[in-house]
Image (cartoon, rainbow, N blue to C red):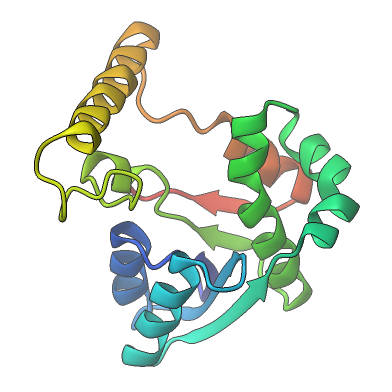
Length: 173
């Protein structure tokens, strides 16, 4: 019954897969945000061009963050640096897409970590050494935390953001 939705397109494995699955099923609007020249923006733009996706890019500046930082922290209910850092792109994308009438958002959050798609790990170029060890250490930490708390990917930040911005966020993975 969903007719239209917005996808936060990062250019990563997860959001690319979602874009390809959703574009033939609903009126899909894709949005990407980040600093000018960021790898996510370059990959998302290439993906959007290649697959003829309706796509908008928001270039986030320091001034934008300075002006909205308190609102971002209030929207996620946290001032923890990692949570706020992760929420910045989400916040600006959702805010912009809401202006265009979108209130349902898809995100592929979390999958890149499991499939080593994050550039942070750079496993395609470095099969051994520090980055590979860092990846396995990080992955083991994530899996151990999930085991301890007895649940999967923690969606608290996203749930709080959705509630405070009056939108629905769908995480299909």
